[in-house]
Amino acid sequence: MPNISSVSEFLLMAFAETQELQLLHFALFLGIYLAALLGNGLILTSIACDHRLHTPMYFFLLNLALLDLGCISTTVPKAMANSLWDTRAISYHGCAAQVFLFIFLSGAEVFLLTAMAYDRYVAICKPLHYGSLLGSRACATMAAAAWGSGFLNAVLHTAATFSLPLCQGNAVEQFFCEIPQILKLSCSDSYLREIGFIVFSFCLGLGCFVFIVVSYVQIFRAVLRMPSEQGRHKAFSTCLPHLAVVSLYLSTIMFAGLKPPSISSLYLDFVVAFLYSVLPPAVNPLIYSMRNQELKHSLKKLFQLSSRIN
Image (cartoon, rainbow, N blue to C red; front, side):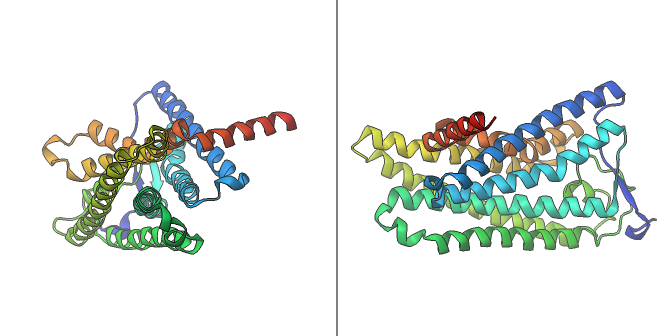
């Protein structure tokens, strides 16, 4: 049986067997990727250039945009290149780098979404203590903790996954190097350590999810007690986008981890992976800009300034 030392490359899933359909998939992924680059780039530029947006909420949103750009840039460009050049190959080191970066960035995003829920909780439920609880140092510490936790999580998973002997070939049934698909290639009973790391990470993610749910229960209670309808509308306009992003991202990740093997199929696995790896970075900027008047005003000013320059 060949082991890991004999594997020099992996073969990713082919989107279609004909060149025409491959080019169609390339065009679809290119459109989504450009939309993600444009949307997140506009959010980054608006927050960086508008001093009125230099607040904890927008500081976390800036970090989220950076993570989204990193996540989608880790998986989609390689999938586009394979479709364009009609190939499936990815090098062993390229696959390892893809696993590391995706776990790093997606893990950091889960922790960052938890910090953003805490930010909304303090802003609405403890507004008098907002400045003391979420000063610049506290925000920087929480952001650094999110990035650092994602990094450590990625190191553990990447080291555990790529130390496994592979006995089932090198064909990965996904459009990027995904850990569950790589584990299918490992020898029997040799992947139990990585399964343990996955369970541990899932428990951490579940803890973040419970914290977010409890925070929003308290937030909605506080909002419904507000006497002013304008105040309730403003509070909901800052909370609902974050809640929508959390629901989209965590629900797809949890479904991917909890779905029973009996309903697993190549098509379903592809759709689920697409939903948690490609869709959120593309739609998050749209979700945040739809109901956020400050961000919309900043984007409008940015477009006006750009038109004057041109």
